[in-house]
Image 1 (cartoon, rainbow, N blue to C red):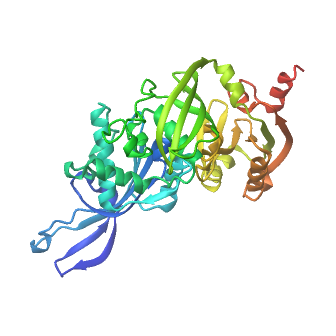
Image 2 (cartoon, helix red, strand yellow):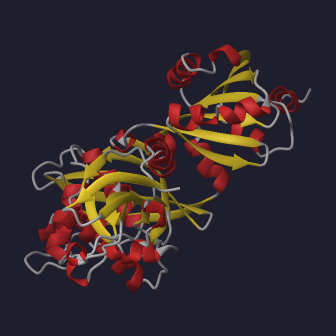
Image 3 (cartoon, rainbow, N blue to C red):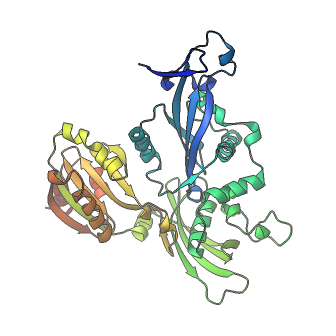
Length: 429
């Protein structure tokens, strides 16, 4: 139901009505309020948020003797962009200014990105979205549903040229501060078949497209990989390589279509830019071999959650918003993932993609709450967070375990009702 304000404009009888959800977005006026993008371009994904004020105020309405009422409202837009495969992949919107509802949607979209927010003005927002609209068109990828509600963002004149696109990349990407960070980002862009990302991290004098110098970086060196994921990378610096650039030997585990390969690369780095890359060898490995290389210990704490099903539903936001977690449904319960607040795990000699997760909670259909982390410190931090939440009076700890190999995911996908029963089967009891 509309709430009528008592605001009158120039004694025309014009009244402002708060009824934004009734507005036709496509045919309304759009007034830019704010926008941001996550600083995750070098990880291969982006989330974009835009806030607009919309109204149906006509330019000549004050000259109309019987002017109609003006309806206004807020439009909050979220876009998820896959920079390697799908382009603009999803679109979501909220038509009311409810901070909790906006935060809930924001958490579900960007909670797993380990992202910082980079402010965008209206010009940069339109330029960024136009770049990715063109990506969808060039790759014959459909835009997400709801195009009539966001099509006003695009304009042919807003698509930047190559130089402007690189400036925009520099604005939205984090500053590369170490060789480890540079190399891990660079190889992820190579295996992600992302020539723009590769070019951004390369000294332009050394790109194969440059005629000023013998080519030493080919953006398509690993072009045969498509929809590939670099799960692990180990970097070793070669001694005595400083003058014309530092040389690093890298051993990567890459997965494509369920198949794993071990790839050896030699990278040359100077002034935090890549100036050379060579492929020194590739060899297929089994998924079992890959799992053994990437295995980590798992620390598990098991609780009984002393709440009824109705009370659990009433407290479910505590897991997602209160703990800054993302939720997904499974056959046997709900999985909540807690991600690190940044992507500092890229700045390591030994990079592992799943090191961005600092812990998870699995809420079973039988009311068990199982906490898991890959280090004792992360497990203790998540326990502390639980014990300082509104759930504390309803938690009864029933066990603490350390496993040399992760087991919780296996339990989640089993048909066993209780974790203790699962452990008995593991022990052969």
